[in-house]
Image (cartoon, rainbow, N blue to C red; front, side, top):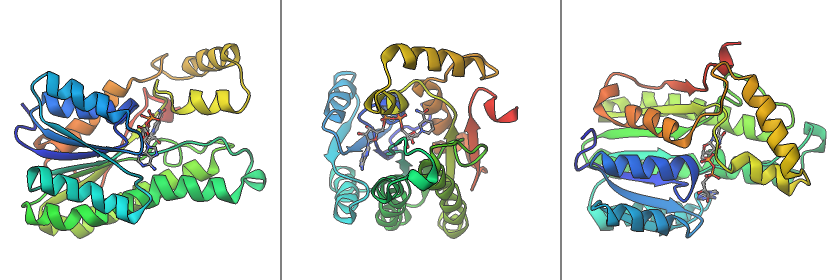
Length: 258
Ligand SMILES: NC(=O)c1ccc[n+]([C@@H]2O[C@H](COP(=O)([O-])OP(=O)(O)OC[C@H]3O[C@@H](n4cnc5c(N)ncnc54)[C@H](O)[C@@H]3O)[C@@H](O)[C@H]2O)c1
């Protein structure tokens, strides 16, 4: 077991990448706190407990300081310490060209995707230091780091910000035996983009055709899975990456190399 008796906080763990990470961390021996704005994460908690693992749910919005603090307090009250933080909560909104992007959309995207990482980290760091060190893994994206994406400027800017923030964390925290890295997923088969596409009036047929065309542009010929991203997060969270610090690990089926 790669995370035996480690205590981990995972934000955005109701669905997709965060849910897969919570399940994998638990299988690897960690006790996990699942933080999410959605109560759906309770289902994953039940699943983990049914399999013999230890898990707790805390509801909150990572962009609200008191909620971020509540997430960390829940970890402290439940398990006393923290060894791993996975800042994963994020949203995507299709905003159109920059000149048409609504300020409210810009603010919401940056507040959750970037400020949320700052807030949850800010409250976690003192507890992680007193726990003797640990590992922080932030979910950034290939979008904004290795590639830009038209119509997604706010999202790309927020994720580029996460990479910058991660590099600073690595420098500030190394002295406390805390490493900070980020994972940069490519196109992953979660509901993140499909939900937005359908919300903007796209049909299921158009979505299916678009996804097939996009998959054909990925060297490996397919989308990644949330389980594959969870494996990369596990590597960065565990001692297997003990000398990896301040890095952005791109997991995109080779897309960014074109
Ligand atoms: N799916 C992809 O192709 C892809 C690619 C690159 C990066 N990412 C990033 O991966 C992360 C996870 O996305 P996913 O694809 O699993 O999508 P998802 O929608 O399945 O998961 C996002 C989770 O974050 C939660 N969440 C949203 N806003 C929140 C808030 N304010 N506070 C707390 N929780 C909140 C949601 O309830 C959900 O459980 C995000 O940061 C996303 O930007 C995804």
